[in-house]
Image (cartoon, rainbow, N blue to C red; front, side):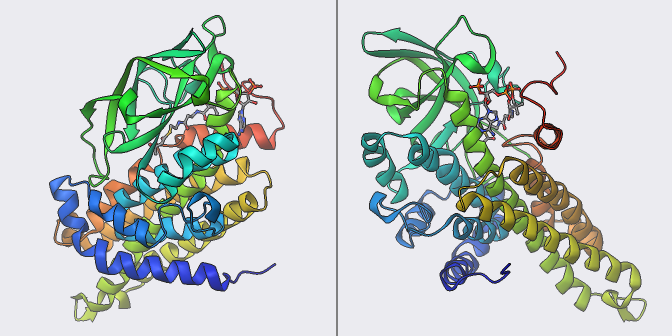
Length: 387
Ligand code: CAA
């Protein structure tokens, strides 16, 4: 067992940390306040190779491993979790499934513009009545000539307004209810119309959109993986994506901890620094311990994935623990800062708002528990869903 990062991983971590400290952190409060999507930032991240860091070089990526990508997400999210989710969805939910399930032609055609950051990617699974029960989706793909006509509406699509490529899930077999009649497709921005910009509690520097697809005609070259096997694409993609969200939560919690620790060393009350009081020391000790525990879970899941080993259960555990920890510990950071923590003078209230979503997207905490329970009990799919 080796707990040290490799030289390459350390360099990528340092590069991202440095960039985030100089180019993201100083603007994060303003982007949050103004609900500003920093489109130009992604070109600069691309110049550093960070929009496809774990994509093989032959497809325009950085050729690093999955753990390096996780380190990138952690560092970006430490500065601005909205930037973190934009890169996370672009990479693990849009680019990596093309590599994992695409034909050679699809990989060479669709991956390089994403890996080089010339386009952003999006993942369109969720619908108004298909959130946790993703298999209930109603977007239709009707056979037409040598392809399909796609019609439907998707909700809460990260990057929707800015994406050039969408991995979109639609029902190809209307006779089969649930997950089995679903296929995955590769759509372009021109197939999609954005109908709404979502207003959110946090993550205000990221874009979350409702989109519609209105009779888009596509050929067979746009089918990702086999027909009616698209739900496997969705689930396999989310297995890896959840590790990314865990890294995002970890980065947010780390940021909250650092502000709280610094504040405790300076703020004085009752004639002492508040860090001299045991009540504050215990909070900081718990924060540090829980962040360490999370980091081990997250890096283990990433390592399993890059070894090509099963990581469904470990990714769900990492995401569940990281997200609940981030929500809990960013609240503690506010508590340590007291009244200041509740104001916009310090960033911890933003961290708290941003942390909350990590318990919801890419599978709620309840769904992560379901995934873990199925795995540890050796239960077959659907057997833990009460119908
Ligand atoms: N890997 C590969 N395939 C898998 C799989 C996995 N981890 N888990 C299930 N499957 C396959 C099954 O084998 C089955 O395939 P076959 O039909 O070919 O046998 C198929 O998927 C259906 O599986 P289930 O019977 O388990 O399906 P279910 O209806 O019981 O649903 C669920 C399972 C876990 C509840 C699933 O619906 C789920 O994960 N829900 C949460 C959805 C979610 O995470 N949405 C996130 C949206 S994206 C997002 O948030 C991005 C963002 O913006 C940040």
